[in-house]
Length: 272
Ligand code: HH2
Image (cartoon, protein in one colour):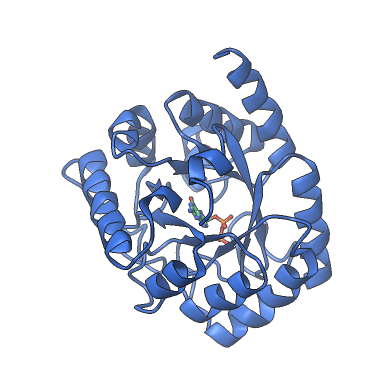
């Protein structure tokens, strides 16, 4: 069995993002061609990413779903092109996509539906022995930013993640291989996202490493005064990642890896 996820990804570790899509919210089309995605993945790894998250389906607000065939067509040449050289996380909700990526050596399955999207995915993860990220989302990408509401966002996200962790373990996924993610921007307002950071201790109390993906998200642009923002700046992303790390996050998912690695190294030195 793999070593526990917190040993494989010590705090803080950076997960680099490579979206092999024409429609992602912050880097649409940049890595849509496999050869460009391969170059990007190698660069992010060289810049200090512990793992690179390869995705073939955008989950931005309003995005339409893509078929498994199309997702495979996008990601397979990329995973093949870097397998063995660059540690791979596969950002998918589909069992078939995860299975093929794991066969090529991917070591983490990052599922934004927390095993609710495809009934076969839990079994694929359990059988493949991979790491797993379970993420909270209210609603679904097409509609999730239409007036999201919670009584208590942190309590509800914590209860959801605890329940999905139990589900994964029932399906045979060892607890030591799982990390949890509150899903910044997935059915959440600016206030919800920052409340989740402010009270991150209530999520670390679940006993699993926490992954945070605040990178370039629109809440950062909105925070800085543009109510119509669809993205956030690199500087604001780094600030949010450092704040998340300071509050106990383990893995920081980021598009601008070098800036995150350098900032987190400085933040970490203050803890030594
Ligand atoms: N955010 C995005 C996608 N996948 N996975 C996890 N675990 N956590 C996140 O916060 C997260 C995620 C959205 O960002 P991006 O991949 O850049 O955009 P898109 O979904 O439009 O491709």
